Length: 219
Image 1 (cartoon, rainbow, N blue to C red):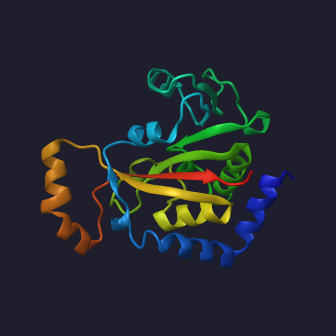
Image 2: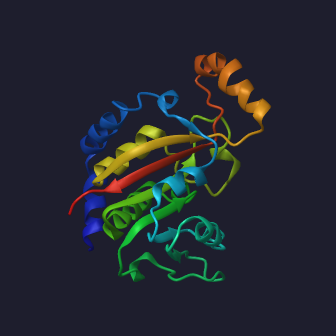
């Protein structure tokens, strides 16, 4: 059993550890309304990557992010992993990855996995990151009334406190959480300012996606 898998197994078996980590996250983001809003995840992605970064995208699909990053990140090195063998990838299993990376991208993936498998994946990612390396993860915002349930392949809902707590319990530092709201200007104005009191009263969010930026410590 790998060190990452053993770490995930221990965390999953310890409700108290998960609970304590979730409470640590809640000190910074008491509710979803404490999480700042960004227009799109690509903004956060570009802020998180430095020139020359070695990047691994997990669940990369058609690798459409590669040309976008090439246009914006000087000297970056991109590799991809996806289980779909009908697509062109560098790796088809995370077990085949034997190198470290400055950044790992996990975009709209973790909700498709059972909880225990998602925890193991996060633990493996932690081991693949260089010290100080960052994980950028997106998942449907559970506080939105419908976004998670639009896709029948979604298996595990991740609230902001569950996601942040899981990352902390596995040894990550949560640099930041964001909510993504990509909408026309008039709609943004309506929801962010005019209708916000009603949204908060009903505890129904209008943003559709959560972004977590987390880093690996160590030397």
